[in-house]
Image (cartoon, rainbow, N blue to C red; front, side):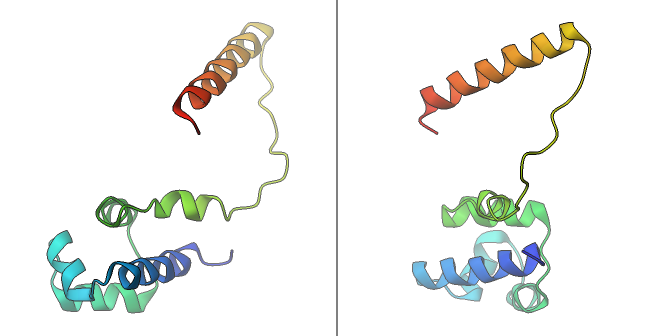
Length: 104
């Protein structure tokens, strides 16, 4: 994905349409002037805090959707001292268990 912000704006427009909201509805709910929302959606630029707020309002995790589009094949593992590697392994196991409990 070349431009994640443009993709975020595309997804926002799609979710607005699905919910039957217009730009004025969104502007009211996020405390912006409707013309500012129009400019934001036309500019293909959005601040992370605003994207998070819109995610909460629309009930869709735009940040996760964008992160899933970033392709990283076999990211390098952190190399550390044996004690640090052991603690890291424990944390990875703990994380895996928590994710399973949460159903993710």
